[in-house]
Image (cartoon, rainbow, N blue to C red; front, side, top):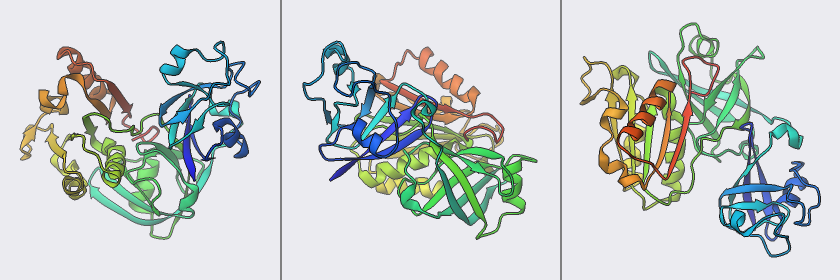
Length: 340
């Protein structure tokens, strides 16, 4: 038996390593050439201190209080030189990946399909060269290179980890380098490469109600999260509000509808900000978040959208006096240069 340990570094890079049963995280990382911070490896110095955000583990009692206090352990801080996982785990490492001598991992894939889902949205499906080599957390992104160049753009997966194909929902930017190539040149069989995964916006264990908010192509990481939730199952209520500027920008609605069957407690609403839209709900995402979806603050909020939307949601939470247990968000600007 082995466990998958996601190591998230402060520069956004992620490396997932395999930890054997009874193996310490530090040893597993070193075995796979990830040089986590350490000095003593005996639970004495505290150099390897990290935070376990998700998962089960045992720290034993062979470390000293100067390295890790009882209060720190209660807050989820761990010493990777002593930590023995008993489940998959997500660990926040408080140093950049470069400090651990991690070289960005490049992956290859071939174009399976490019669909112009709307005038401003492209759905890209890639067949991975080596699916087993690609590990990521649902919600994360990669840097996808424009074929024939060294230019890359950042896009979140809309597909789930472990699949043979990778999906992306990409904004069709006028005169954009990547979207221009996809819209005008890409053909099935073309080879593409990307580096990653990256990002601190990813799905955590669903232990309470979940509210998801997506603006435009910010739907992509939400789809990846929903795929995993549907596969694993959850008894928590999940509600999504998905907003766009124009009705024609609403994409992947069949997929969203399928989640209502795969996730019995999943519901969603779409809204369109243009006043002349025929969509049932008009306005912005913040106009259509009912109080019931805040669950009195006992909720995890996932938000992906442009900066004005993120700020609007934060303002709404403040104005309504709601402080969610967790609030995870990813901003993207109206260019191809950042996660979208």
